[in-house]
Each structure stands twice: as structure tokens, then as C-alpha cells.
Image 1 (cartoon, rainbow, N blue to C red):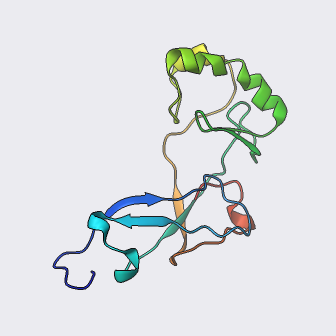
Image 2 (cartoon, rainbow, N blue to C red):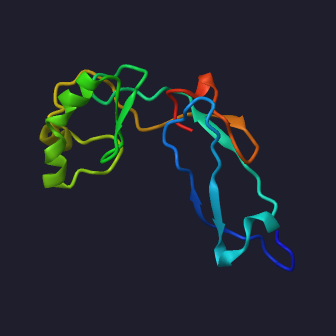
Length: 146
């Protein structure tokens, strides 16, 4: 709660510019509070979480991933998998399939993903890894979402 305020400020926007952690590279979120309240005038609590499962290749399902297609948050374990998946990429532009998440059967067909042998899940499980404002990913974080 900031000075002279009767109720706690609300977060207007929170931004973290990293999708996949890099070992040893410090992560610091940008926090913007409602009504222009400076973050340094308030007591903020931080929690960092890591996904339990590793990110898997969107084409073959293997881990670890080394590449990401930014148009739809697809991840790939090799240039070969990225190239194989590229054949369905133009269909995303024609059908508007640019959102991330589990693909429907129709979307998979349009993108050329039908027949791929991997399991999709919609629920991600998380474990708390830190409670300070900045976080430096370790080797244990590589391949996981934070």
C-alpha cells in the first residue's frame, strides 16, 4: 500500500520479456501500477514458477527445444522439425490460425500436422522456484516455461 492510499494499488500491466529461460540471464519483470503509482512506493510480493514438464517439439514431441516460431509459439528441437512444420505455416495466414495453445483437428489438417505422433495436454503444472523480484534461471530451468 503506497503512502496516503486507502486501498492497495492494482497492477495495470505486467510484462516479462522472456518466453524460454536462458541459464544465467537475469529476468526482471516490468511492473506498471494503476493510476501511475510508482512501483517503488509500494510493497510488492513476487513469486516465480517453473513448469514441471519441459517444452517439447511441436513437430515430433522431443525435448529439449532449441527454436521457436513466434507467429504461433511453436517450439522445435531441430532445424529439420522446423522445416517439416513450415509446410503448414502459410495456411496459418490464410485461416487466421495464429493463436497459441492446443490445435483443433481442423487446424492440424490445415497446417499439415495430421498423423503426427505426440500427445497434447492443456493443463500445465507449476512449482515455485523463487520469491524475490528478479530471477536468474539455473540449469534446472532450461527447457521449462517460467
